[in-house]
Length: 333
Length: 64
Image 1 (cartoon, helix red, strand yellow):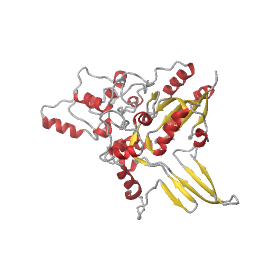
Image 2: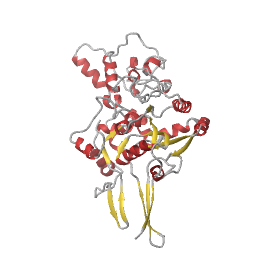
Image 3: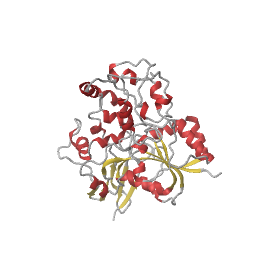
Image 4: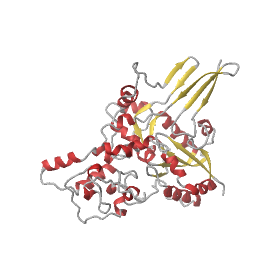
């Protein structure tokens, strides 16, 4: 069998997904035995022009990590889509927006002002900001346009598979590699992870009818390591999050933060979590309910921690920005 | 007319980078520009998040 042609790219991301490929340790040899790497900026020296020179559909598989934050990310997503037979949204940023999508709770203007003008370490009295086009003595310099919204990869191009996680555990990557090599792939559109919720696989002890009357913050309590975090008053995203991570956070005595996205068939992870909490909180009247809600720190940022580009209720376009998004040529989902 | 060499992307590091090198007619470098085409905005979107969550958010600045 001819070797597969593999591409790996990062858009708005941290590089942890790229490192997760190396986290396969000696099994990385199985990957390079099955596939030749033709593009992987983190680890190899291929350039964008090398990708442009490929025939359409040249790459068998591209592992695309990172969210779509600017016009360069979008350009690369479209370019790699053309050059790739099987496009994989690899990691939570690409699949659901990830941590960078927390920016969907703020605006482009607020980010640019903070980053280039008002942080304590910024000295920029003239308020200079990056420009998409700058004339210098020798010619013209360009930078990507910074969008007002962070998109997941599937908002921009069709995606065959999702491998979730921040970063994806190397076991899942090897599962995918074996499936690709054997030609035994799941139907397009599948997520390569568990189908149930993390709660379904969690080893912690749960009551049959749990009730909670207080929310605690992580620094207010040392979890006992045995009981369900929610029953200890700690918000755990387990009821709303897809399984398949190997319970990594739970095993480290930390509540789930939801990086695997919604479970199979669930459209909105945050709404699912809200529904799960609503079924277990206990209060007598509206005042108590209000007090209880006030104990919940940053509900939006918690329920959509890795998915503010995804779902039905996650932040969409901010006022007045839809035209801008269209002007940017992005697909409005 | 000066010649231009574009290195895009800079590879084998965390993050995105681009270098534009301008050469004169003899082929000598006259100027070079190093550009960072990425920004995610942690400076702004961390504001309002619970402080105890920041070790799990800001670790995503760089995962390499």
